Length: 460
Ligand SMILES: NC(=O)C1=CN([C@@H]2O[C@H](COP(=O)(O)OP(=O)(O)OC[C@H]3O[C@@H](n4cnc5c(N)ncnc54)[C@H](O)[C@@H]3O)[C@@H](O)[C@H]2O)[C@@H](O)CC1
Ligand SMILES: Nc1ncnc2c1ncn2[C@@H]1O[C@H](COP(=O)(O)OP(=O)(O)O)[C@@H](O)[C@H]1O
Ligand SMILES: [K+]
Image 1: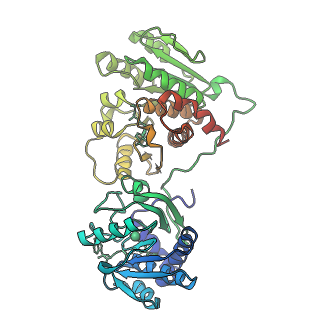
Image 2: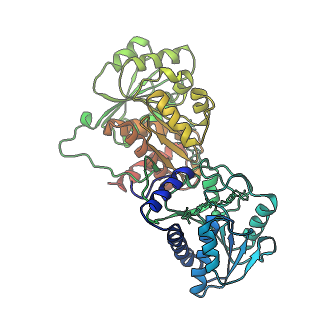
Image 3: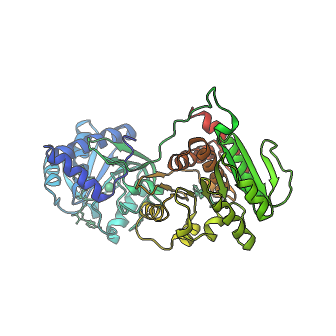
């Protein structure tokens, strides 16, 4: 996972301190950061006239380095500052900038705007006049770049603390921060790029990377590839979507245990009626079941509760979604399961937890000893051992009914194949996002399933 670590502001400061302790001068690190950022901005802005906004801290220091290096390449650069530099490295960077420094309030617009006002040191929202000036200058620019972070976003939670313009490029320095991945901050940036400045990072929390998948081997047969059972309920369509996703997602065999007979395909999925508790318990008494999905279309009445109880008692590897998450108590989740809540289901199950979405997902995973996939426009996959992967950039066309059932089926399919809940959830979330990308615009959940196979093919 090299290069994909996501660090909070405190963790970033500790990682930087380790570099200083190893003998690197603080200003040398700022030069590295500024050099990396200048190179990326140079490539993106083709020598157009540029205004660099510099804040009072080290983010502003990076801005002075960028301005100096790009001016040396012949770019017409101006600098506007928000007061004096207050850090040693920032003061040094400013002293090496030989051009003039305008006051932010008087700064004239330019084609390229570089925001080096605040980074990980932002303590509160920008004052109204500063935020207003930033947004007004951004409106007049054709290219808007953020050094490390858009000024005004909370590094650790991704909240917007003051009005934030839309950026074309954000250059993350040294490591990703949660705000690069979590909404709403992630939504203010069209492209985020990581600049390596030689910082070693703990990557227990990391960006979700494309998985490496394997085609079935010569010794594969349907049960060895994995048997998925899907407990159907009152709304049969949800179970059908999940079953199809599990099948194309890699399971060798999918069995759908429906409440009543229906002959909706595909024929490759074995549908049987298991409406009574005895029939369901009997169908689930099969050690070959490598993943058991409960929740999509289950219902929330007594019958649904009874079916869920039978599924839990089967002691097979569980994927719990939708209604199952509304019926269950967090303390009753069998450890080792995978849970796929959206925000509402998450709140119903775990209450109002503090911290960022990453913190909340990790706390929930720890509490129930299971992998938790906290879904949304950003999705966090958290494991009870403290690992978490964060996905961003999924198509917003996914906000349509049934795509969660598809994800739950995919998780079950990958769990049957891999036997590893965290890995299965990561693979499923990535494939789901990739299938949505391939599906393009205006798809519905049925069409999304058709794009899972090409998404898999791209990772073999
Ligand atoms: N530590 C280092 O040597 C390095 C840091 N780097 C850069 O340094 C940044 C972090 O630097 P800092 O910790 O100095 O933090 P910032 O530059 O983000 O800002 C901190 C300063 O702004 C003040 N401040 C915070 N919120 C404010 C607000 N809303 N209005 C007015 N003032 C406010 C703080 O009191 C502090 O003086 C990173 O984002 C990155 O850009 C890079 O240069 C790499 C090396
Ligand atoms: N705006 C969005 N951008 C990207 N992905 C989204 C967005 N809204 C929802 N999703 C994804 O779509 C799926 C919706 O799941 P869910 O809310 O359970 O829907 P349903 O219950 O109708 O199947 C989740 O995987 C979620 O991460
Ligand atoms: K910034």
